[in-house]
Length: 255
Image 1 (tube, rainbow, N blue to C red):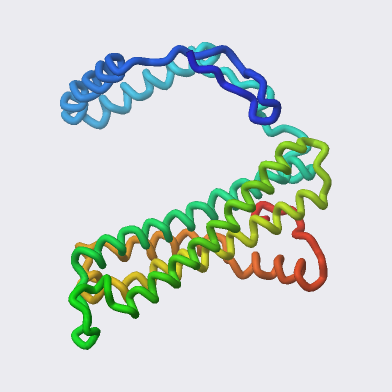
Image 2 (cartoon, one colour):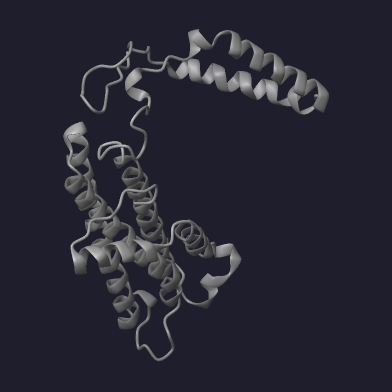
C-alpha cells in the first residue's frame, strides 16, 4: 500500500492506495495497444461521440474518482495574501532555476562525449586527441566552474525554501524575503551559466557539431526560450535593491 503524507505536517493524508503490479501494467499496455488500431480507423464524428460518453461517465463518478483534501486547496488569503502563501511563486522560480541548471549540465555532459569520441584536434595543437588540447581543457574548466557555482546557489536556495516552508504560517515577511533573495540569486546564476554552456560547447566540439544531426543546438534553444519568459533583468534589479539599499523583494507572481 502507498500512503500519502501532508507536506506541511508530515502526517498521513488520505487513505492508503494499493500498489499495482507489473502484470497489471502489462495488461493495461496491451489493451491500449489493441485499441489503437481500431481507434485510428474510427471517423472523427464517432471519436467525438465516444469521448463525450467517456466525459459523461467521468462526470457521473466524480465523487468516486476524485477526493481533494482541504490541505490541498489554496484558499484565503490567496497566493500573495500572506508571507507563507507567497512562497508559491518562490517554489515556481526555484523549479525553473533547476530546469536551467539541468539543461546546462546536460549540454556539458553531451559535449564531453563528443569531444572525447568525435572531435578532432586543431592542427597546430601538438596533441593527438582533442581531449588533450590545453585550450579545450581550459574551456571545460570554465564551464564546469560556472555550473558548479550555479548549482551551489540552487542548493542553498532549496535549503532556504525548505526552512521557510517548515515555518508555515509563522513565517515572517523578512524570512520570506530572504528566501526570495536566495532564489533570485540561483535564478540569475543558473540562467547565465546555462546559456554560456549551451553556447560555448561548440568551442570544444568543433564545426561538425553544429550540424543539425548532432542536435547540440537544442540546449541553447530550449534554455533561451524558457529564460525569456521571465526576464532575468528584473531579478537583477531586485538583487541590486537588496545589495545597495537592503530592500527585500516585494512578493509577486515572479518573485
